[in-house]
Amino acid sequence: MAAGKTVVSRRLAQQLNWRFIDLDQVIETNQGLPIERIFSLEGEASFRAAEKEALKQVLEHDSQVIALGGGAVLDPENRNLLNASGLLIWLKVSPNVVLQRIKRRDHRPLLQGDNKLQRIQELAAQRESIYAQADIIVETDNQRVDQVVENILCLLDAHTSHGE
Image (cartoon, rainbow, N blue to C red; front, side, top):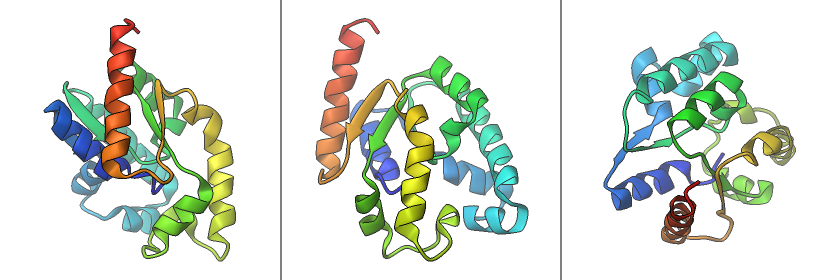
């Protein structure tokens, strides 16, 4: 959350001359509703089911960079699909930086309530062991988008040159 997934993924896709996909946009198009409305009307379980279907849909194509929502990799089936299709990159961001970045935008369904920092910390703790399984991990705190993209490109090059 607020790691820069969309902007970094879009820029990375441009650098690679690949297609950019924002999975949340695919879900919204498929469902005809914004993510926040899906959560409020139908709940998280319904959103996760729509997310899985959208992921299967987009993974039918190659040469693309997909910006995933932070919860997409929590589902083991999604992880298997993703691992079979390409490399997973974790844009790692600290809870305090997340809080700074989201101050202007208060629409995140998983951050409802008074103590947003505590909720961010809880989500980070719940997800970290799964995120740590990513093929590439890039810190985004105090990094400009172009720096993050350059780091990813270097790590991708190193990853592919080692035959991994």
